[in-house]
Length: 73
Image 1 (cartoon, rainbow, N blue to C red):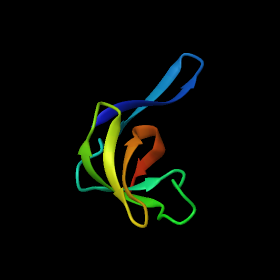
Image 2: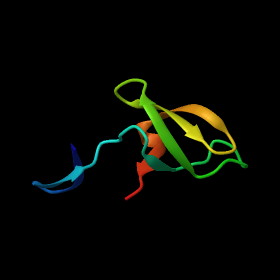
Image 3: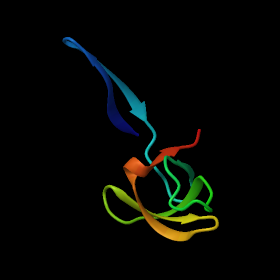
């Protein structure tokens, strides 16, 4: 789990726990990489602290920054 700031109003800060990406997890792409690929990807392995190698149906492998996807619950 990671701690993420979700709202700040005045001096009040609200926090929530977000699940960390894990290998073999499906994620939703926030923007498709091409007009023909799916909007979901399978995370294969972590490339760096903020990047993941993923497989995207009808696209193939790609390196995704964590800002490019959201976890599917």
